[in-house]
Image (cartoon, rainbow, N blue to C red; front, side):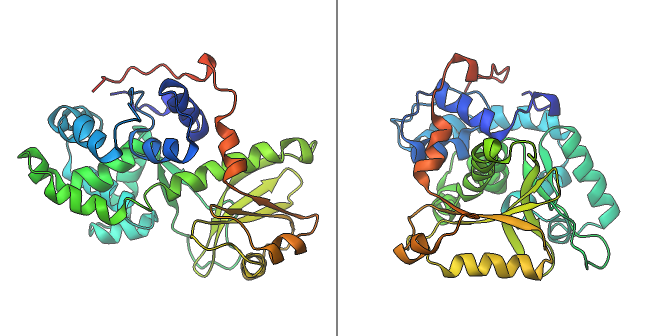
Amino acid sequence: MSQHPSSHPSLLAQFRSFCYQNKATDFEKAVEYFAVFGGMGWAIDMTVPLDALIEQKVLDNYRYIHADITEITHSKPVHHAMLTAIATGDRREHSAFKKIRIERQKGVEIVDFLIDKGLLLLDASVEKPLDEEGDISDKLLFATPFMRFWFAMVSPTYKSIREGDYSEFRERWLGVKNEFATLIYTQLVWELVSLSFKEAFGDDPIVKIGSYYDRYVSIDILAKRKSGAYLAGTCRYGKSKVNRSELAKLKESCRIAKLDNVENYVIFSKNKFSSELKNEIEADTRLFSMRHLSKLMDNLSGQDLIVSTNKKY
């Protein structure tokens, strides 16, 4: 099972490869299945319901996949505990260390090992907080969606899965299934923003994009341009339409974070925008919807396919 850092393309490249390989046409369905199986190069039949596919491809092959993963993690329970803490928590290092009751120095060594093995990626705040006392705890991302799924859902219920009893897994999965792809959506929105502003920003391109966080505030999207100017954004996944208060909240978050040089704002909504917000949008703000995000699937071709050396299950 190949997990070396050099073998990990961007999340967008992994997503496009997944969509091309599995002939995806429905964007939301593609994201839902990618959040579980992404990054492994496995052929997926998306006409099969997701839950049935998980049992067939993952749970029924638990012993084989587990054996492959332990080759990467060196079979150390503390490595698996750390990965599960990150997959199920707020992704901050110090939260994971606390959860598995490990001292900071040892925790940092483990995280460094897991990054080196290509399982994790550092997701540092795009801009370091101005008034943070001491080091801010960095966040972490999984390099491939499947590994996040495995350590969030499968690894914690391995004892019953190993015995062929999937009931504990099913109960755990049912509790998070509807929100599980949210992080993938946010990462794809970062990709969308980068692509959407490429031409508009011209000679002053985005040099770094991700999120901003400190002790007091969190901003879903923060992009830093070559000149030092920022683009800030928020992502909303609720069922109600996003209204103008979201833009006010975003601007207030930037004020609290003392990000004085924010020149552009973006709001992504999975479920539309209120007419009052649309009517009041100024030139420095752009609204992105699922229609825009789904363009990340446009013009798929054989060139998008990432050849995988992983075993096929």
